[in-house]
Image (cartoon, rainbow, N blue to C red; front, side):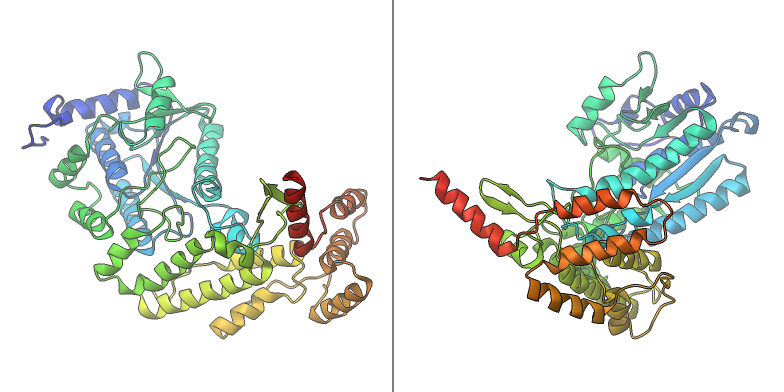
Length: 474
């Protein structure tokens, strides 16, 4: 198998043949008993790495390719739908072809736990839309799910080798980390944070042109058409979103081999390009994403976000209030908008059953609202019914709970007594959560923590900050 290049600029194929690259991969594979975990994102780099590995191992006698190769993809549950369909079908082809040909490949889709998903954090807990200085999504939705899988394989096998389709020059930080953790005399590096995990980067010296030249000239062993992959890049105007396993892995940036909800970039040019190239049904996704991004604009924060942080304290920087989570009422609005968006793409898109938010996520949001945010009205089923026009099989609360009528009575009593209604409702919810427990000592710590929160009104806090600023200037 040869790869021809017509470019006089640097190319790895000017120095190494495909056979030599395969030999290098085989040497690493046969050098020990550690199983391999291949990070596959569906993009050009990870596809190139996986194809090379497949063909290299295919050349080995069957008795030498017994060591398992796990191919894992990270599904954040908010991936761009077009990409999800492509990756899902590709994993199915890889799994099917591996079984038919006796290759040692197994595929797996790793996902965040329900309490760590994008919607549970954003709509449930009220986390602000991610941005460069607070990109909370990466760790919860990508790093932790991938690392859990890797650590499970470590527990099973003792050690593993993680294969990443990364190339030099994509990230200065990544280049530095790889060089610092390189093992002398080996093609492996030590993982930056996972014990007993090693990293192998078979295309680290490939240039961008090398990747496309290889994919165009070497057919996919599992039956994909690599020209389709190129068309997806062209139509999305996108770069690659790699499997993220630590903080040094290059982020998705402007790539749309990633989340359709990404607000880290100012404009989602790749989703715009997809729409321009015929995916009109994705317009509601883009509109929702753009609205999320607008909530980070300073002039909107006072309208949509609490004056207290999630822990109940007030924080400021240079006399300016630092806003906390989205207000509960705004979270209800976001949930309604998301469900409306889901209804639109079901009607206008290719998949009438597409789920932008899952039932387990809805139940988790409902639990958070009722236990942490004093949603006595039980709003999630109401919002769902109003938008979708039907009910789901919601989990019933065996202990019973406070309701909207109770909330109205409590608000009247607290208003008369000039006591914050959220303070009293939080105390009542705490008592309810500890009800029936044989050991209730922890309730005192919880009550003490609630009483020590900053219960000043927003108006009082802003007035106090203004007074402090005036005193500092006198």
